[in-house]
Image (tube, rainbow, N blue to C red):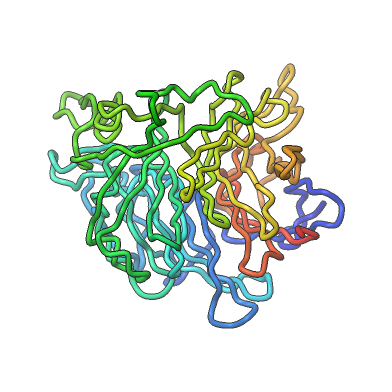
Length: 435
């Protein structure tokens, strides 16, 4: 099936679906700034016109240099005698109208390993750093935080420190209470957290006033190990406080003979939650709010360590494992998650695919999970670019079929799924009978 932009067969989709690529690594944004690579978490927002959609997109980069342009910069420090140019990470915005790319711009720079995040009900994006780095000890700023990036206006570049210092993955905001739920990707010891804001006002900047961080605990079961659960397992839950959300992790190590700044072991918030009997998960990944429920992924959960999907009902304070992959054949390390307007779960697979004697049998997949637990393949990465991409010199020739899907998010009208392939870095708009 050819891409409407390049004419190349980049994706395999079910009958009735079509797609268009845009926002490739190296494509010029506003001000002539090249689009950064490693596209990851993303959310779609209604634009100014009925057919307009604005995407806010993460880039999971480390010391690869500031994005440039007019982006707000959190930390412009770079190592002495290092040509990298400082922290990469960052967030970009993309405008689409009528399903066709219009323009893009840099929004936030000077952050690190911006993996996923989550939208807010008031039209902003919470971008998460998946790293713990005490760079303030060497002249920079600390990393391992959440930042708010508005669709309109400039990002403040101020970390929401009370959301914790840990390897953040994603967030989900409950519009009824203002509570933000957060996943931690720190295998093999990860917690599931929530943030109760001091100011629950539905506006940009309110979360920066701080709040209380808590970690999930199973009632009457201290330190429950929820890593090897089965589909249908459910638990009554409560929450334990994390008094010092910015506490150091279990250990800090050095590199190259410098000071100890690189976080390792259990995170500071996890250690405090563990002391209060908090539950243990493997590696928290995607997180999404839908119809009163928080859905989230443990990418190596279950006995097969192939991934599990959890549903947390805040009203009932009940946690349920609604899908556990029995093998990598059915679902291989699901990562980002979203839900269609009709409630179908969409998972971005992060498995390495399968190969035999060097021949690729399948690439990573885009999966759906119906309410009856049936899994379907909704897309397959088919990006064999051994001849490169005409007109895009920033894309190195190569076979990218084992690169992960990321950032799946539906347009406000539910007709288009926007999603990324992380490497070489490209965004797709997929249309078809999603209903």
